[in-house]
Amino acid sequence: EDGGPDFYVVNGLSLGDQLYMREVPSSEAPVITAFNNGKVLKNLGCRRVGAQRWCRVENALGGPDGWVNGRYLRESGGPNAEVRPDDALVPGTNYNATGEIECAIAGYARARSCGFGVARSRNGTARVSITLPDGDTRVLEFADGQVRSVSSVSAFRFRRSNDSYFININNGEERFTIDDAVVNG
Image (cartoon, rainbow, N blue to C red; front, side, top):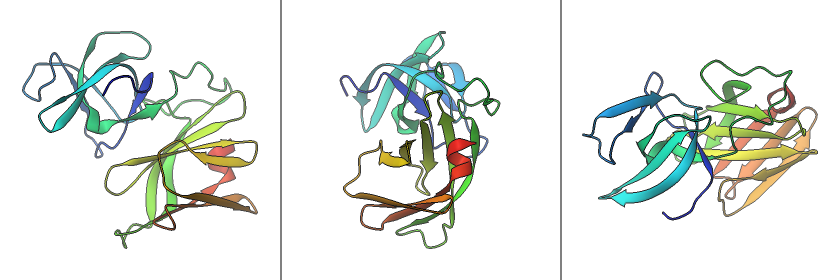
Protein backbone atom coordinates (compact mmCIF):
# COMPACT_ATOMS: atom_id res chain seq x y z
CA GLU A 1 0.00 0.00 0.00
CA ASP A 2 2.92 2.37 0.64
CA GLY A 3 4.73 3.82 -2.33
CA GLY A 4 3.60 2.34 -5.60
CA PRO A 5 3.79 3.89 -9.05
CA ASP A 6 3.77 7.64 -9.58
CA PHE A 7 0.81 7.35 -11.95
CA TYR A 8 -2.17 5.07 -12.52
CA VAL A 9 -4.48 4.69 -15.49
CA VAL A 10 -8.19 3.97 -14.98
CA ASN A 11 -8.86 0.56 -16.47
CA GLY A 12 -11.32 -2.33 -16.27
CA LEU A 13 -14.58 -0.38 -16.14
CA SER A 14 -17.52 -1.84 -18.03
CA LEU A 15 -18.66 0.00 -21.14
CA GLY A 16 -20.43 3.21 -20.09
CA ASP A 17 -19.29 3.03 -16.45
CA GLN A 18 -17.19 5.66 -14.69
CA LEU A 19 -14.86 5.56 -11.69
CA TYR A 20 -16.06 7.97 -9.02
CA MET A 21 -13.62 10.11 -7.05
CA ARG A 22 -14.96 10.52 -3.51
CA GLU A 23 -14.22 12.85 -0.60
CA VAL A 24 -13.20 9.97 1.67
CA PRO A 25 -12.40 6.27 1.00
CA SER A 26 -15.96 4.95 1.07
CA SER A 27 -18.47 4.02 -1.64
CA GLU A 28 -21.04 5.99 0.38
CA ALA A 29 -19.01 9.25 0.40
CA PRO A 30 -19.97 12.25 -1.74
CA VAL A 31 -18.67 12.17 -5.33
CA ILE A 32 -16.20 14.88 -6.40
CA THR A 33 -15.86 13.88 -10.06
CA ALA A 34 -15.76 10.79 -12.30
CA PHE A 35 -13.25 9.28 -14.76
CA ASN A 36 -13.48 7.04 -17.82
CA ASN A 37 -11.16 4.18 -18.79
CA GLY A 38 -7.82 5.57 -19.96
CA LYS A 39 -7.67 8.58 -17.63
CA VAL A 40 -4.19 9.00 -16.09
CA LEU A 41 -4.16 9.90 -12.37
CA LYS A 42 -1.33 10.88 -10.04
CA ASN A 43 -0.88 8.49 -7.10
CA LEU A 44 -1.06 10.19 -3.69
CA GLY A 45 -1.10 6.94 -1.70
CA CYS A 46 -3.32 3.90 -1.16
CA ARG A 47 -4.69 2.08 1.88
CA ARG A 48 -6.98 -0.80 2.78
CA VAL A 49 -10.47 -0.06 4.06
CA GLY A 50 -12.06 -3.38 4.91
CA ALA A 51 -11.56 -5.70 1.94
CA GLN A 52 -11.09 -2.87 -0.56
CA ARG A 53 -8.00 -0.92 -1.61
CA TRP A 54 -8.66 2.81 -1.88
CA CYS A 55 -6.22 5.23 -3.49
CA ARG A 56 -5.97 8.95 -3.06
CA VAL A 57 -5.36 10.43 -6.53
CA GLU A 58 -5.56 13.61 -8.53
CA ASN A 59 -5.84 14.31 -12.23
CA ALA A 60 -2.31 13.91 -13.63
CA LEU A 61 -2.56 17.38 -15.18
CA GLY A 62 -3.75 18.98 -11.92
CA GLY A 63 -7.11 19.29 -10.29
CA PRO A 64 -8.91 18.19 -7.15
CA ASP A 65 -7.74 15.17 -5.22
CA GLY A 66 -9.89 12.47 -3.73
CA TRP A 67 -10.31 8.73 -3.23
CA VAL A 68 -11.08 6.04 -5.82
CA ASN A 69 -11.51 2.28 -5.66
CA GLY A 70 -8.05 0.85 -6.40
CA ARG A 71 -9.57 -2.13 -8.22
CA TYR A 72 -9.82 0.02 -11.35
CA LEU A 73 -6.28 1.40 -11.32
CA ARG A 74 -3.29 0.02 -13.21
CA GLU A 75 0.29 1.28 -13.24
CA SER A 76 0.91 3.87 -15.95
CA GLY A 77 3.46 6.28 -17.30
CA GLY A 78 2.94 9.99 -16.67
CA PRO A 79 0.55 12.28 -18.46
CA ASN A 80 1.44 12.05 -22.10
CA ALA A 81 4.26 14.63 -22.08
CA GLU A 82 6.17 12.27 -24.35
CA VAL A 83 3.33 11.44 -26.74
CA ARG A 84 4.19 11.80 -30.40
CA PRO A 85 2.86 15.16 -31.60
CA ASP A 86 1.74 13.60 -34.91
CA ASP A 87 -0.34 10.92 -33.19
CA ALA A 88 -3.70 12.20 -31.91
CA LEU A 89 -5.38 10.84 -28.78
CA VAL A 90 -8.68 9.00 -28.76
CA PRO A 91 -11.10 11.56 -27.24
CA GLY A 92 -11.55 11.13 -23.48
CA THR A 93 -8.50 8.84 -23.12
CA ASN A 94 -4.72 8.97 -22.88
CA TYR A 95 -4.43 6.44 -25.70
CA ASN A 96 -3.42 7.00 -29.32
CA ALA A 97 -5.63 4.10 -30.37
CA THR A 98 -8.11 1.69 -28.81
CA GLY A 99 -9.80 -1.40 -30.14
CA GLU A 100 -9.71 -5.19 -30.02
CA ILE A 101 -6.82 -7.63 -30.45
CA GLU A 102 -6.85 -11.39 -30.88
CA CYS A 103 -6.44 -13.18 -27.54
CA ALA A 104 -6.88 -16.56 -25.86
CA ILE A 105 -7.21 -16.68 -22.07
CA ALA A 106 -7.29 -19.89 -19.99
CA GLY A 107 -10.68 -20.35 -18.37
CA TYR A 108 -12.42 -18.09 -20.91
CA ALA A 109 -12.98 -20.35 -23.92
CA ARG A 110 -15.34 -17.88 -25.58
CA ALA A 111 -12.89 -14.97 -25.36
CA ARG A 112 -11.43 -14.47 -28.83
CA SER A 113 -10.66 -10.77 -28.53
CA CYS A 114 -9.56 -8.42 -25.76
CA GLY A 115 -9.87 -4.66 -25.59
CA PHE A 116 -6.69 -2.60 -25.77
CA GLY A 117 -5.40 0.95 -25.56
CA VAL A 118 -1.97 1.99 -26.85
CA ALA A 119 0.11 5.02 -25.86
CA ARG A 120 2.92 5.73 -28.33
CA SER A 121 5.87 7.93 -27.35
CA ARG A 122 8.32 10.13 -29.25
CA ASN A 123 11.23 7.81 -28.46
CA GLY A 124 9.64 4.99 -30.46
CA THR A 125 8.28 2.96 -27.56
CA ALA A 126 4.65 2.00 -27.17
CA ARG A 127 2.72 0.70 -24.15
CA VAL A 128 -0.24 -1.51 -24.90
CA SER A 129 -2.74 -2.01 -22.07
CA ILE A 130 -4.89 -5.12 -22.63
CA THR A 131 -8.11 -5.66 -20.69
CA LEU A 132 -8.61 -9.33 -19.79
CA PRO A 133 -12.09 -10.92 -19.52
CA ASP A 134 -11.98 -10.73 -15.70
CA GLY A 135 -11.24 -6.98 -15.83
CA ASP A 136 -7.54 -7.26 -14.98
CA THR A 137 -5.03 -5.58 -17.25
CA ARG A 138 -1.83 -6.76 -18.88
CA VAL A 139 0.59 -3.97 -19.89
CA LEU A 140 3.20 -4.67 -22.57
CA GLU A 141 5.98 -2.34 -23.68
CA PHE A 142 7.31 -2.43 -27.24
CA ALA A 143 10.71 -0.92 -28.11
CA ASP A 144 13.30 -1.62 -30.81
CA GLY A 145 11.53 -4.81 -31.99
CA GLN A 146 11.45 -6.22 -28.46
CA VAL A 147 8.52 -6.74 -26.09
CA ARG A 148 8.49 -6.90 -22.31
CA SER A 149 5.72 -7.26 -19.78
CA VAL A 150 5.35 -4.29 -17.47
CA SER A 151 2.82 -6.33 -15.47
CA SER A 152 4.05 -9.00 -13.08
CA VAL A 153 4.01 -12.42 -14.78
CA SER A 154 5.67 -15.76 -14.04
CA ALA A 155 6.71 -16.52 -17.64
CA PHE A 156 6.89 -14.37 -20.77
CA ARG A 157 7.80 -15.21 -24.38
CA PHE A 158 7.22 -13.57 -27.71
CA ARG A 159 8.02 -14.16 -31.33
CA ARG A 160 7.66 -11.93 -34.32
CA SER A 161 6.41 -13.11 -37.68
CA ASN A 162 5.63 -10.89 -40.69
CA ASP A 163 3.83 -7.84 -39.26
CA SER A 164 2.69 -9.34 -35.94
CA TYR A 165 3.92 -10.13 -32.45
CA PHE A 166 2.76 -13.42 -30.92
CA ILE A 167 2.93 -13.18 -27.14
CA ASN A 168 2.71 -16.07 -24.66
CA ILE A 169 2.32 -15.29 -20.96
CA ASN A 170 2.30 -17.64 -17.96
CA ASN A 171 3.06 -20.74 -20.03
CA GLY A 172 0.18 -20.28 -22.46
CA GLU A 173 -2.49 -19.14 -20.00
CA GLU A 174 -2.63 -15.86 -21.94
CA ARG A 175 -1.88 -15.50 -25.65
CA PHE A 176 -2.09 -12.30 -27.67
CA THR A 177 -1.53 -11.35 -31.30
CA ILE A 178 -0.59 -7.70 -31.75
CA ASP A 179 -0.08 -6.24 -35.21
CA ASP A 180 2.56 -3.62 -36.05
CA ALA A 181 -0.26 -1.18 -36.83
CA VAL A 182 -1.26 -1.20 -33.15
CA VAL A 183 2.29 -0.53 -32.00
CA ASN A 184 3.40 1.94 -34.67
CA GLY A 185 0.16 3.50 -35.86
